[in-house]
Length: 72
Image (cartoon, rainbow, N blue to C red):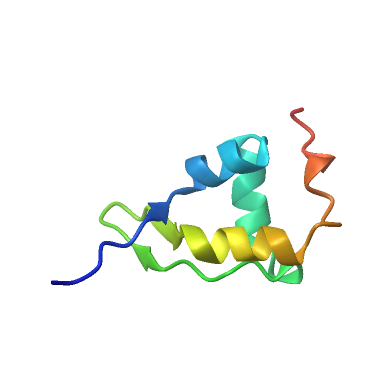
């Protein structure tokens, strides 16, 4: 039996980083931040990431200026 993968949307990433969805979208699309590539794109264009990839990125970028969200 295949192991279920745990996935996050941009909204989930926003909650994890305590930023707005719009800012999370900027983070995930900014190639300079080396954010992981999406695991998949669902119908409707919704991108999803593996939770462990996102958590690994957070652990490797503790100095990342995430709090620069202009909405917060």
